[in-house]
Image (cartoon, rainbow, N blue to C red; front, side, top):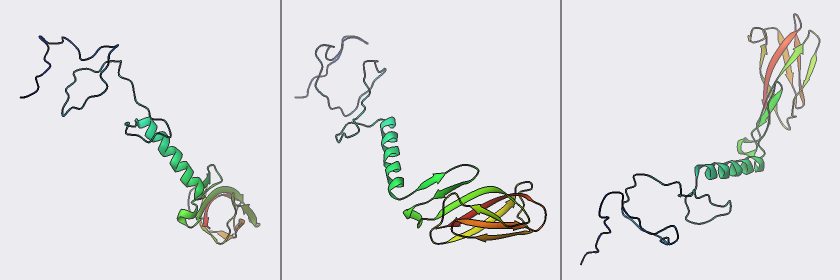
Length: 166
């Protein structure tokens, strides 16, 4: 014998349970809802929760940010953004460091100290004129672990530079 349906006598009539007497649970193959009441509470698991509760988008984002921050810190990823700055990619990428800056360079040797020193290897990748963004034709660059030395053969000008190393 089949279980009888709970059917109201007419549309929008009756409820299952009351505000004082709630059902403990329910299992449904399908469920049709025309509106969700404001009485529905949002489930937000605690940070250390390990249960079957659904996670909200904000909870997942906060946990991801926390995990990503922990992993980046543990692997040595560092950065300093600005006119003169660097990105240290940490042990995930062989401790590679990309640095950049902008400095006034003259016809006498100018020493440009890196924002962070390299430990093993460095190469200047590019030197650009800040006024035209063209590659310097008349510039000598000697990269080192703690600084690079630059000199132009014509007039003093601002040089934008990029260096890479580890």
